[in-house]
Image (cartoon, rainbow over all chains, first blue to last red; front, side, top):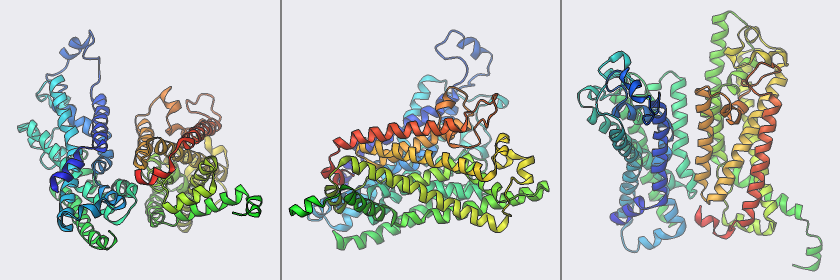
Length: 272
Length: 289
């Protein structure tokens, strides 16, 4: 059952759309990062010679790219692959056929795991792919001239694991991808919980995005931007973002969504 | 059906029935309660800010300051109002099985698309009325109602998202112009969402398109994009602040140009929607969505 659900979650058009959306969003941020003459132009070498070594580098490029559109679209990308599938299975009668073969509990567990993994992958994969790209086109190294760095390199400016940026930049980028995975997984579960309650697939897909934005707006307006749900997916968007803020932001969504999913799935059983 | 029934059949009667069903189906939902707490929070934050500014500058403020600070603020328009509106209306094309039955009784694809468009228009009016009503109501408790601009706006118009040239217009008329731009803009984006949803047969793709259009406006505004992109970007036509108000040196469009801009897009999207609705497979729609 789990393998079947996993195949459905990853092998569908919406997953590809989520990946494409991620790559395009990162490209928008990357284009803002790359300034000055075109790398293929004649004046590029002269331009580079006047700058510190590693002025443009593979790590900063990814950090810049992540500060663009992707943070805002993250909740939609997370739910796109498979979060609405429970509503779809129910309304199409697929669920009735499946329950002739496996228990309801196993089906729900397989669905939960598949949604969690696909949502996480939809956010983390574009970052990993883009990091491969920046490694191919830009030098791998950090700009030693602090005054001319493209990103704030102080550890407290780069999130709770910001000290990795100087000591092990590859691990730092991997940490960003990991955080994106966790964020995607949590918001995909949010969408799944909504789809357990509503037959309207649109509601399952759009509600996490709306809640994310409203929470972000309200917390920012109340002077608590570090607690915004944006912090886990872009932990370097503000100074002094802590593990507590990230874990609480994600933990509340994950626990309440899981409880809601279990409760609604129990109620739904009589309607199958 | 008897001969008498056929003779007495009035298409508009069926249309009125369809519209009533549309309103019941789309507006009688828990989701439509969401603007109430959101607008209350926005009012609480912005009215508080205006009152504090008034004290800090020792200049008298009034209710118009709060209204312009809310509906002229790019962050609120792009981050809150437009997104919430899109969330409420992006599934207007969704039909239940009963809805399909109503559609067959309607018997015309043109009337179906017209009905959907009118429902969207009604959604704009309801949403804007709720927003303005709540903000004005809360602001009215804290700040005085006055017929003219406040001292604060006359001296520091930019603090309240009022362009200096707009002060020549009475505040009620200026707010009317601002709300017309917002309502036309939201109606147009909503129409674009419905057209894309029809084209892709996916409501969420329509919603996603709306989000991207909205974010493109936000980013153009943040980047202070210059011409020619600024002429086509939605931010210059949605936000009242970005207008010339008769200043020939201004790089911003005149208010009437923005009205024409939205009218042009509305006409285009309505026409495209009409063409797409002629090809729509309504029977399979529910299964796909």
